[in-house]
Amino acid sequence: MTDIRWGILAPGNIAHSFTQDLRTAGLDVAAVGSRRLDAARAFAAEFDIPHAYGSYEELVADPEVDIVYVASPHSHHRDQAILALEAGKHVLIEKAVTLDAAEAAEIREAARSRGLLAMEAMWTRYLPHMIRIRELIAEGAIGEVRTLFADHTQSLPTDPGHRLNALELGGGALLDLGIYPVSFAVDILGLVADTRATGRLSETGADTEVAISLAHDGGAVSSLVTSSRAQGPNVAHILGTDGRIEIDRVWYTPTSFRLIGRDGAVALDYRSEVEGRGMQFQALYAEDLIRAGRTDSDLLPFDESIAIMAVLDDIRAQVGVVYPSAR
Image 1 (cartoon, rainbow, N blue to C red):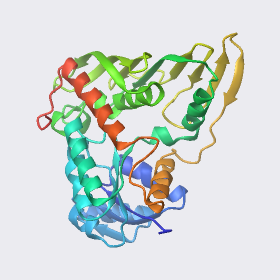
Image 2: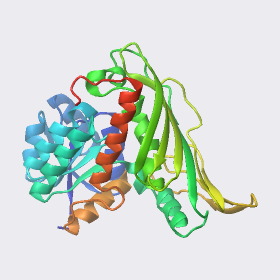
Image 3: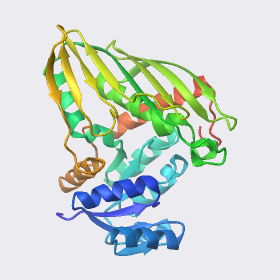
């Protein structure tokens, strides 16, 4: 298989960004599906997509679609990913991959039983500057990595009826924003052994601020903050025994970083040169996996996505957020 054909499920804001980057990379978008046919047709017209459907069932049944990008709210990811998998389609699922770890495990089993790719769309992991940072750490450029700091803080809509504040849709800072630094910490420092969290809730019961302290299996620790009501620097620092890496804002998008030695001198000044937002790199990686007949990502194995969801479950319990449909 040389030409991988994409189907877009739920043409909202994130799907616009993703599809624009697919087009930037010259990838094939074959179809889009929405609960509203007019929305699907408008999206198809905007991106010159040949097929538009007014239901997700029609989208996943399209024989010209090989992989489905699931871009709906977190609360719908499990059912829609499994719908696509049962139709024989690979899936790239927006982060957070589900509402909780139990739902993510159901997707894993559905994918494994059919020999299909299921991959979380944590696009930050696939960006060139993150690839280079992992290489430097593996080379010992900053010695033993001891800790990291990161924030993902934005000023988002406060309307109680907005998706971001609706508990039934998985609203709150944690799943929309906080997953970025949590996944980053696991990527750099390894799986989590202990979680401590405190937070603040909105009038709907959704979290608006969460401060997180993680102890990782290898002994390193991380300090993370997320907010949906106040925008911060959105930078990240990785500290080692022989130096540190300072990632500029916005650290989870294509950006620059510096490697600074123990003497305080800049040993490397890295600048990203990426066309578009950078969401195409995860898509290119997924396509390479499919062509190779592989069903899991080396950069973010699905078992690790489940482990990250379990950390978010723990954080949510400590903060006091309860999603109506979560377990």
